[in-house]
Length: 323
Image 1 (tube, helix red, strand yellow):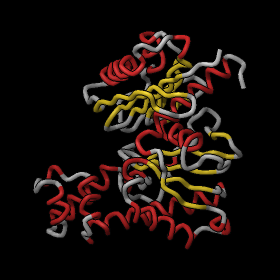
Image 2 (image 1 turned 180 degrees about the horizontal axis):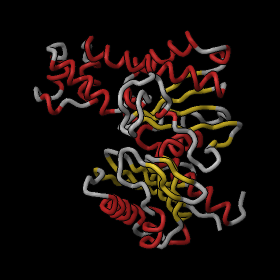
Image 3 (image 1 turned 90 degrees about the vertical axis):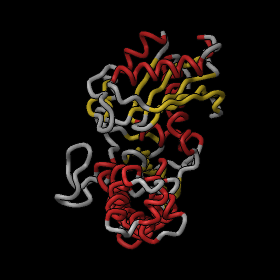
Image 4 (image 1 turned 180 degrees about the vertical axis):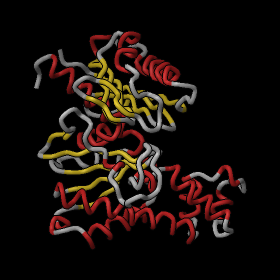
């Protein structure tokens, strides 16, 4: 049976967003809450509450299922969370917990993969067969599409572009490694740079954007100051753009994509960071640089929801033998 709706869940380090989605990609109803910091089961409870909120009144026969994007390494075949940097979900059977209470089919995947699927199906990468997406937010994730298909690797844990090493023995990454891309581009890294600048009396505009409170300096405060024209804040983001560009060099040289899409709350807000990254990539990558376009995502915060719903539709149709 061809179903009309799916529920897409985007679990982030900052917030959880859920939407009821039509097949053509329209979000009919959505809801969101801040991500609980009190443990994994509070996260699961919030996911279930939001699913119930957006799917109220929808008959089971109309719902393909529930897709959930999680910021961690997912063994897609086993539907298990193997590693999760920014949330305590590693080893937690989120799929079974949600399925047992919602009584609906549930599929989980990496949130970066699903953002890429959303942009592929409904957004900036529509029609692109070979592209790379990076999501820059609380952490740095992404997804790969090769020859029109999502590339997950042997067990579904591929595409972790945020943990490419960009500096040997560099800054400590939240995952425990050193010199990973996420250690330079994620919200915590940008906030730390902003606090360092404010402490040295160079970041007055950054401090002002945080209401004059050093403890309230966030990545968003750096962005606001940069958008107001503050050169110190712009310098922080341009330096981040150089690091991002060097990561893009490796991705272009390895995969020769037609398109690179930059999304996430930071990636879609810091235009000049993305422009700087594209300049670095074009200056340092090999011949494949001539093939690639660098673009910002167009779905905004909806990319994860739409990608998760698209996955749910695909899984439902595969179960039903539909193509």
